Amino acid sequence: MSRADARNTIDVFDLARQRGIVEGRLAFGAARRLRASLRDAAGGIEYRLQGFVDERGRPAARLHLRGDLPLTCDHCGRAMNLQLDHEATFYFLRDESELAALPVVPDEDAEPLLGSSAFDVSTLVEDEAILCIPVSPRHAECAPSTEAPESSTSETRTNPFAKLPGLLRKNGR
Image (cartoon, rainbow, N blue to C red; front, side, top):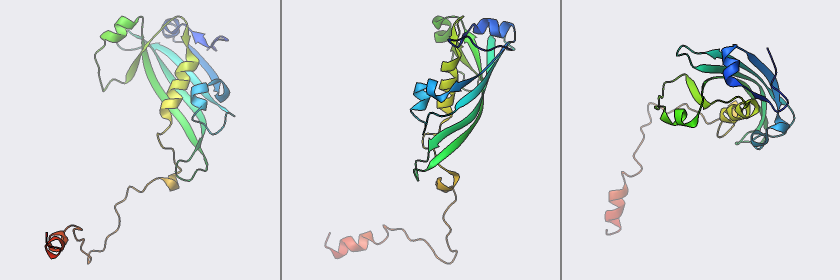
């Protein structure tokens, strides 16, 4: 088990080969792009990046994120916390031509990334955390109801346009 260096960079190919683990904490204050979506900069995200070689022989890693994201409810404007417990798997390619040549496979469990010997773990953690934030964060009680409105069985719904032809004739059209 190791921690990333001061710049938070690692060799992902070496990490995968050695089945290494990098753990750490990304402070919200150090995550400028993520911080723009947060209510405040206090706190951070715990992460664990575990390297391995996947079943196709590719260098890969599994990222696990944990933490509470301080958000603001889009409906009521009050503070809310999004509990983050996210896992994602990646495999690494050596150059952009390899990445560009990949076919789009929608059911792939792992996402391809351009790997390097100076891979920035903080950027990956920040990117994944940003992707976990809903477009419109809301408290459970503020979320729109997905249930159909109740309707009485004795009451029939009338088409609002049903009377339109009669009204048009009445007005001489």
